[in-house]
Length: 343
Image 1: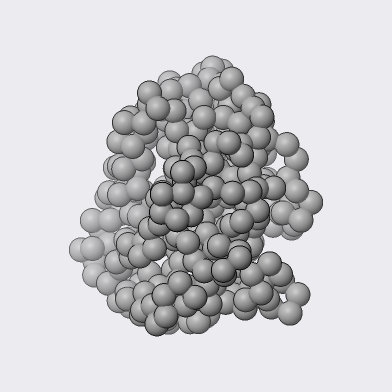
Image 2: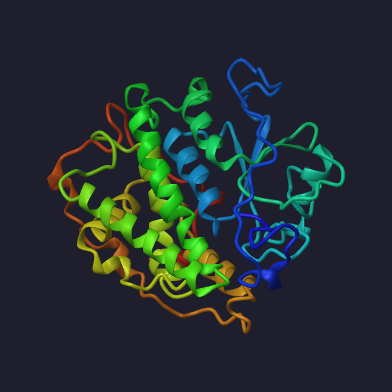
């Protein structure tokens, strides 16, 4: 999620006023076991910068938790209310990230490429010794955490991208990305009725297909949690809170689809998923920052969150959430979601 998602160089006031275009990840270096791009996997060397509001960054949060990489890859959480200068570290004392020593994420981008003209997006991985951005390739970051970072995984970490299922995972994830992950943005930031209706149709056509797929199977691919589930979850968990109303994806709420509502509650209640979700950050970001859509920046009080903790009964479909592995341990104390920001 970037400060330029409503169009190249757009500020917050341009959200919903310019044609929506998903920016490509300009910095696509990879952190790998063999260091072939110059960035070898190394415990403590890198810092993951996220906003808990952002679905793309939330993928990395879930993966990091499931794989037990908290001690190997430190975490910086940006304020959900960014300004036109980019994501800011105003949640930290003095408004400065305590590890990187910067006030704004764009400072790490500038160290990597002076005068970089594109949007400053999260998730971003920054090299702590140099302060330079390494990658903002949200599509690849989680795949590399699952595969290239394997040596640093916790004992019992699940295989989120099993080799035998990769083609199917990629195929399922591609449709979800096009029509759901990106589709809600195409609907929400549409500037013509035709563009909106096309995106709206794509969103619900794909959700219906996914609902059918999940009717008799617990997870999207295979019988364990994979990358495909992570990618779907981060959009579904935001659906009723922001996409249904704010982005006008209002054919029905998620909770009105018995299959998808049970599926997303199943994941939410699985360690590593719901314990990364901050509903306060999600709502405040979308409703305050997107002033082209919501000019008065009024944040809705609802929806009621207690339903997230109700029984889902998806375990009756079988499946093994972590495969041959185990659940992740407790959330680190300094990464816990505040009580008022969760059910």
